[in-house]
Length: 312
Image: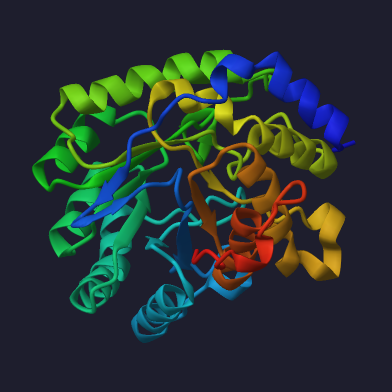
């Protein structure tokens, strides 16, 4: 159960991790201080197999329109992907991904939208960066050096995801650690250092991988519980000195017909855990939640009536 006593015990157990400073996250010409205001990454899915139907764009025009709408709704970055990570989804080859992605990236970039591309393939990453993407959402680990060098070449930002396998479509059939953070911090820390060594100078963030499948977690409720732990304990990665990014879960097993409200709920857990970048299909809902969390006091604050509402 999530209650104040449980949260207090968690904070006390890992008190040394709470106050580590993290560097600002630079994307193109924008510098996002995620400790002052958490950033929002909206999602556009070009794959018809993507499980979150509301994010699927069936055409270039629809994808560009959705990207512009997400930006107007408060997304700092729009993340575009051309292959679903859903287990039963069709595989999409690099050239097919490029054909889908490049026109969308070009039009959004021309419209002034900060575009991220989700991929684990260096060929796809290069094409997207050449088309104007400013951020690589790296969902694999097999080609780190090549992708880091591309990010350095194009001065692109990076989100480095923890995936239990070489990419979300090729997961390891390994047990999920009850406490994954020690091993995760070591692995992600090494990858952040490698990115800097390869010349990446724009923003770098780390993603604990709550949005990806874990091959052994076949029980949906068990998976959501594990994801919730990852969200609430995000602050344990602050020692790496970079923001934490989370792809917010849908939690269908709990939310059922109200699944579109789920990411707002999980944004609360992520926010309590110190998440700096919230990747979401539901930008206006998550923006409202983060705005409220930023402005509402924990206890009585004299002069509260004179406070201005923060803009998130």
